[in-house]
Amino acid sequence: MKTAVIILLAGTILGLAPSIYDATFFLSRSRVFEQMSIGLPESTVIKILREENVTCGISIRTEHSCWFSDFWRDYAIRVDPDTRTVNGVNYYRRYRPTILHRLFDPKGSGDSNQSHSQEGLK
Image (tube, rainbow, N blue to C red):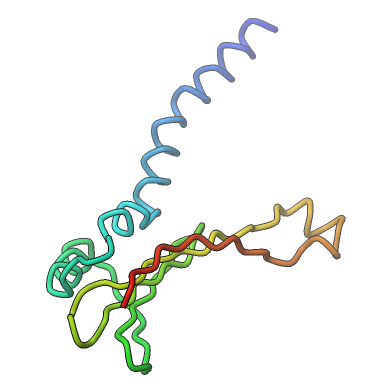
């Protein structure tokens, strides 16, 4: 009986592992963000975003900025309107508390973000 349970658990874990990895890769937009760099032309950025089916929120400030998100991070790309090149890329990592934290630790249930950015010189 014990051997049957171990075999069942091992089969379940081995069967689910590739699916979970594929879902994480599919749901993450980090591969899109990793293609962005300081100095990249705006036309290239637009092409990459369209190919990956990423829709941006757009800022009304003097510089063009685009932001998008996935379950784990919020991403931002800034384009200088004069040079039409990327002058800033950053993301904010989200902390999502588990269900147990939400149930048993109401103080620790808030989101906290970690910022990572790369800025260009103007």
